[in-house]
Picture (cartoon, rainbow, N blue to C red):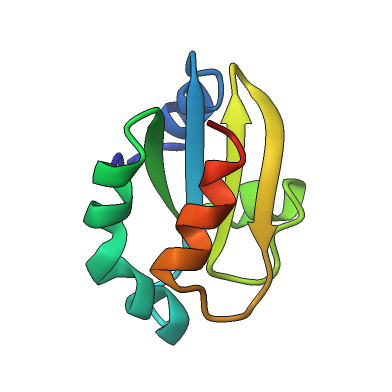
Length: 105
């Protein structure tokens, strides 16, 4: 999981070649804390993707620009173009996330 430290680093990841999953989260988000323990398993099961954790509070302008208001949220880009999103404020399970990502393999 890549955790960008600057907006410039995040911007570079947007234009990353291949498929990139942006996981929007926040420290105060209980549903985000629910997902975090199984994120390494999700990454291991989805090797075609680069995973980026985006703290929504640190990158509020990015979240607004991308219309991310419910967290946890996942946005998938391929070669800089959005190809899918799993955005709502509901708790997501490992199985739901894997099913979402499977449609992009």
